[in-house]
Length: 439
Image 1 (tube, rainbow, N blue to C red):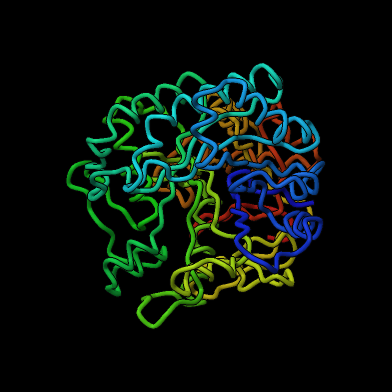
Image 2: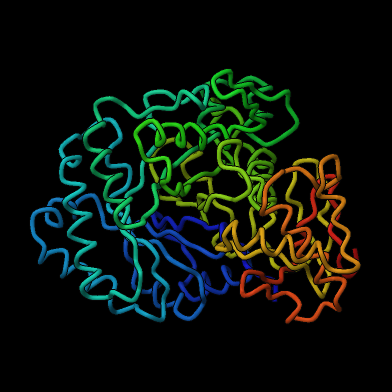
């Protein structure tokens, strides 16, 4: 079966009265390349339905739980006993997110309680389920940034300096990710020019030059992520892992909601998935794809506000896709805005690096593969058709696949000391053609 994409997730919002049964949702997810799901709370039926699926789950402690979690370690232990332990190890819970966008402008009362709540939950998890490796983090809106344009000028708000320093220190101590909600859709809402739309939808555009970093950006998603990266670096936490907890595009909106159309939603999410699969990364974080949770699995028909708030769903309540976002495991998909069908995957598949493979591992794989008879590594040399992106991961992927194809396409030929995996998603892109059965 085709491998799921380790970096593609979805958000499961539940402000709705017509959601499918949890078991149907679990089956739907297994029919896609989605490997992660984020819940905004703790939903026992969906957690039970995901048991044994290998789909990892982020669960949430509600904003309203923060005061008790912060002030009382026993409350944190009770929370873990009720919301985590009953589902382990069958359900793969990866992260507990404490609150959602707690540091957004508005109610400032929870900010000082955020870090104590995170610490108490982390202690409770370490005590009750040490082998589960569950991280504790919190999700931020882009409003934690004082500036984000150009990306090199990214910086956190001055009034959040001490709070964020504590949270970031905790994330560093525990190896947990910094989770952020970048939305190119909202950037387009504030600047609804045709060239901005192309930039937001990953469509051809002149690009935007960042005079600070001397880098050129071709899409808003990368620009927003690198603004976050710049802010983290300026705060002294350049090593922090960034995770996109939410991003998406509505397929419907009110008359005054520019760009909320099916075509634009399909272009954004389809091209986002293709961009993540390319492993190109961002200009400041090249050669790897940031874990990204798309908002949202279904529409939430009970949400207040403009029509767009109820129109972010990838799937309808009857489980049919609203549009093709390139997430299906079988058949051809259309993951680009030009309408060009993606190549149908070959039965034998392609051999690519695992997401967790290190650059050191991949450099060794690259050196080994290129030294073998019959493996042509000229395309990944400077000027070659697969030279860009010029990263160890991209070059190793090409060389590893070449060796796998040349040695008979046996499962054991795609091992590379447990750092490789077979996929039925053709990793080729633009001018770079990966050889494979049927290619």
